[in-house]
Figure 1 (tube, protein in one colour):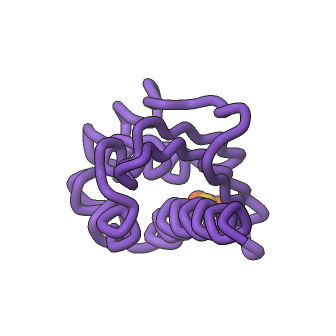
Figure 2: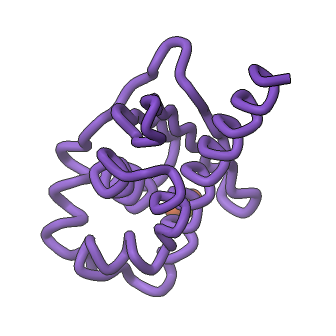
Length: 127
Ligand code: FES
């Protein structure tokens, strides 16, 4: 049912953990299954995501998509990272079963929330 890449990211998730005093962090939940995901980002002066970590309480697909999205986003400009869609994450994992596509939504939404939090902090710092 799952691709080898999904199984690999589920069994050996990349970039797990927490970044203390992160540039931005975002938590999203899935009301249907109750799963929760937080993504932390550290952004440098060039607006590039230098470090990214995640914490996920969820199914295997949620863990695999969190892990994959962190690998995709690291080294990207925040504007480009914002464009990563749930389909992009699923494609990078060589596909997800249709019933599990909502899990990749969680990863894309958590990254967006972390970037929005980072931008809000920037505005507040300048104010
Ligand atoms: Fe909840 Fe996958 S079943 S995120």
